[in-house]
Length: 205
Image (tube, rainbow, N blue to C red; front, side):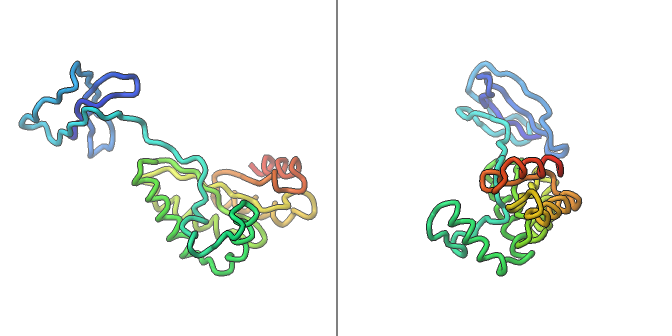
């Protein structure tokens, strides 16, 4: 057993929190009345003095783009705005392989985990230009890390999304969900038909 001793809980109480490393669970929470941690006793296992520390639930990252992570040196956004980022990414699409997507996505996810985030929602580009490979790669990352963190993959459909002009992108969105993406997503603020984009995404979901 491992004891996080003398730690402050979110409600302000001081407590010893006992962890069961085999089960991967909290075994007990015992309120204490002083921040002074008693010396370890034989049989106590690992006892960490965390007096002065605040113990919080693990954070979640609600909006990531693991398929675009760690590309700052390779994909330069000349205008430093959203339009420039989209243009730079589209130009880089031919050079981005499945293996590259998986390696960068996994590294970025593990970096988030190392900083405490145990849940992460990531977008993955879907559209005529990228096909389904971003989704396929991030599903592989999600599944490979399933034992240590929860990852949701959002199939982020390209624009246009609605009508005849958006038919191919909408079909790919549905295909991405069928192959295992967790969430249907779009960019209505960039779509020529914002409400139509929402309708397609909601229908697919």
